[in-house]
Amino acid sequence: MIGSLTLVATPIGNLGDLSPRAVEALREADFIAAEDTRVTLKLLNHFGIHKEMVSYYEHNERQRGALLLERMLAGEHCVIVSDAGMPCISDPGEQLVARCAEAGVPVTVIPGPSAAIAALAVSGLPTARFAFEGFLSMNKKNRREHLRSLREDPHTLIFYEAPHKLPYTLADLYEAFGDRRITLVRELTKLHEEIIRTTLAAALARYQAEKPRGEFVLIVEGAAPAEEPALDLDEAVTRVLALAAAGTGLSAAAKQVARETGHPKSELYRRALGTSDE
Image (tube, rainbow, N blue to C red; front, side, top):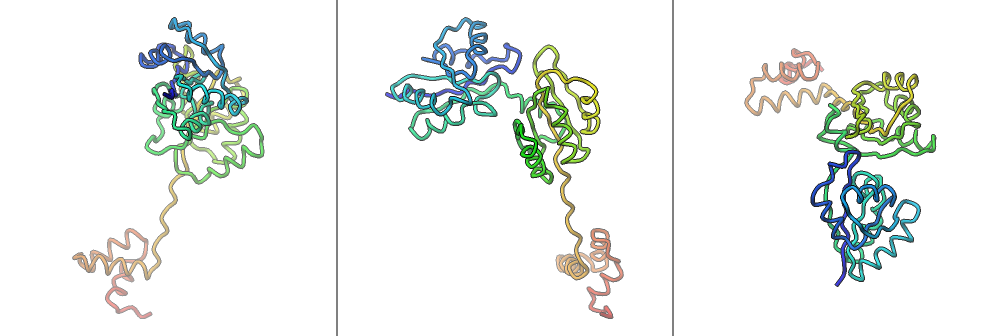
């Protein structure tokens, strides 16, 4: 009988955010794949859990993933955790889940803390449609090209950033997007949690003068929707005729379309009647 993989979301700061289901899963696992075993050991010790841990991080995913899969195929149950938040989301785990799916190993998830979603929820910016962009490239050219590709994206954009890179990222965001609204969420769920609702220009000025501290989630306003192109005169007349055919009086239809398009009501009315000189 084959084993299974369980993704467990871990606290992003406050250890009280670890759910009872997550604690149970950690206790029942045969072994735990951890991004940094030292970080995970602190979490396990807090809850009195003693389990074998296997290091699984960005630079050993390919080699270590094969070994973890082999153990699960032999019947063991693995829990994977990152240092904070949900595995696979800007953290190790994506490749292991893909391996399990291909090999027929059951994969389950125990949801929990997510810095991106928590920051979005408190940002005060639109939440219905958003794009998670994670960490930007360390390479300046690649980072700027990435941001330019998002210039017309109407979704609210979510980025992660480390304090030492924040001023440079804010400068690149301002260059790419202009002065949009931004919410900077710092040290979520921790003692010094801070939510800063401002603009890119103001944020850039602040953190050029002030040293950033703590890990940041940046929630950036999406591009303004492109205005629908105005109808040309012939299209506007067609719109008048369509409204008239649907039961609107011709004069009222011409007035409505004039208001919508900016074309003169009198011209729309004359053309609709077929009395235009043109």
